[in-house]
Amino acid sequence: MGIHDDVAHTSLDFDPHFIIEPENVVRAMFYGLGADGTVGANKNSIKIIGEETDSHVQGYFVYDSKKSGSQTVSHLRFGPEPIRSAYLIQSANFIGCHQFNFLEKTDVLQHAAPGCVFLLNSPFGPDEVWSRLPTRAQKQIIEKKMRFFTIDAYHVARENGMGSRINTIMQTCFFAISGVLPRDEAVAQIKKAIEKTYGRKGEEVVRKNFEAVDQTLAHLREVQIPASVNGVALPPIISPKAPEFLQKVTAQMMAGLGDTLPVSAMPVDGTYPSGTTKWEKRNISQEIPVWMPDICTQCGMCALVCPHSVIRAKIYTEKDAADAPATFKSAPLRGKDVPEGTRYALQVFAEDCTGCALCVSVCPVKHKEKAGLRAINMEDKAPILDGEIANIEFYEKLAGAIPATVDYTMAKDMQYLDPLFEFFWRMRRVWRNAVYQNCQPDVRRSDAGRECHRLLLNLWREPSDHAVVEKCGRTRAGVVELAF
Ligand code: SF4
Ligand code: SF4
Image 1: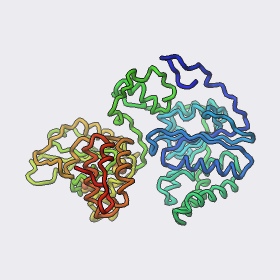
Image 2: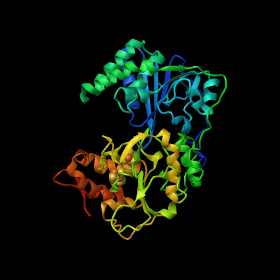
Image 3: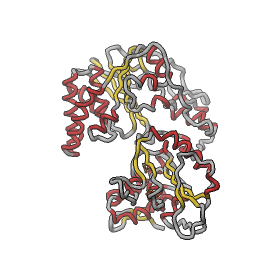
Image 4: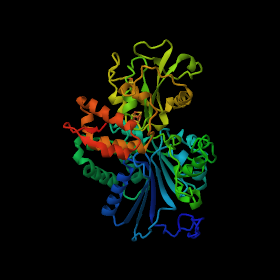
């Protein structure tokens, strides 16, 4: 049972719609973003219900190897009898989706039971959200006679100084809607869990979480469901320009349907294509860096420090950019003896950014008139995304013109090299292993900049992250330094 083995024929057929779960079991699924706190909040919910009620509880948590920034699915069951369902939920009577864009890539409502309650974190209000849903989701909501609730959890989090931490907000919504506990009791128990979980982080963190919980119920809305659909078409999971293997196999995995792939879909000799991360546009960040070419010194620090190679720089000649989109940014290349008409462009690969803001914190240029701004700053992604996609397409085709003065052993010129690692977890692992665990505290110190630079330069050059980690040693300052 399970993976369909159409090669050695060792699997049995089964009916995925055969459900034997009793109706008195609450079966809740939560789609969250790795590291957004959804899994932690759900573990707290299990503790609250398990300890404060007579219900029996169960939780399964599914997440992929990318962990932070990837999709997590929590499967929670609560019921009056002991729960012995040793499998994931196939028929949910509550579904929480903590990221709006999951609806485009994943069939979030495929496991919704008739009459299921659907809770969506949406940047669109209750009057607008329906027309923003994919048609597929609208049809499921109507056909299964679901109830639909929405909240702009990121707005509530920002208002209460919690940045993008929406876990307790969505947890409060779950308790408010599901009725597993009386609402007041649920709020009191959530606050108790907050104190227990975040108490060691200080009173301020606890207070912000309390305020967010109190604000949540005022922002939670039920959506009136129309009788007809008027939704948006689903975009392709992966670009039609991607290689065939990615279209057939990787796209299924990205849609959360990896378990439905038959054994024959796997390469027969076990080799697996590499360099595929550029096709997975995860769009996990609400904010991306925006460059200010007029004040940028072109030092390349932002490109160098980005753990995912999301920022790229190119030197080109003016005549090659005659058909640049109106939103494409560039500046005359700085430096001595620069030929006339030579320009510099810094491009953010918007859909691959994780929103970590390391690039902003490392930028040495402070805006003279606008306090707090640097030569690169985080801004809302939604209004500028379409323009950035056009810019990236143009940037990728733009012929580079590297002057003879460029020296790749200099930190500022490393930005013009193509990165050996790009996008999500591989580069991330290098960063985490070699930088985060060893020298992150020192990176925050201004005098650690040189050492950090040396490390990052070598990560950029190094074809194997294992080799990088093995070469790591510690300087007296406690900063990782690599053997050249
Ligand atoms: S925010 Fe983080 S991931 Fe995005 S470009 Fe900056 S450093 Fe890279
Ligand atoms: S770190 Fe700042 S000054 Fe340096 S290239 Fe990036 S945006 Fe420009």
